[in-house]
Length: 103
Image 1 (cartoon, rainbow, N blue to C red):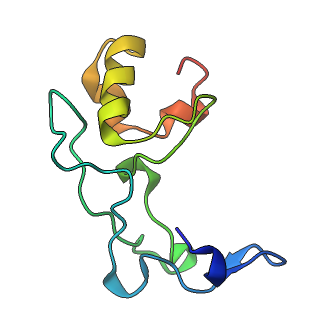
Image 2 (cartoon, one colour; image 1 turned 90 degrees about the vertical axis):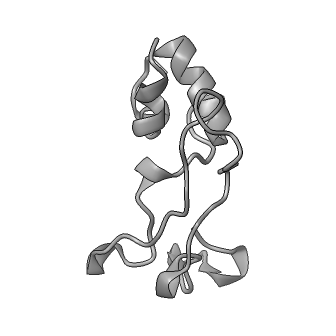
């Protein structure tokens, strides 16, 4: 995640990541919405690999994905119950919304 002001559009590179230096990414996470009303979510930190520095693990974030731009932890849980018949499917693997045509 990156602020526009820190993004180098010519080289497609974020100069200062929102999760740099131990910062957390908590966007699209309403911590009040817990099961059975929303997927469990919490602060997401930077991936612990040098080549992925500044990036977050997409399995722990509920940002807009897929054809309908599904966002927020409560909406991922509801979509999972309807589309996958299990509330856990999209809660534990939110990237499926963008990578699996069933969702």
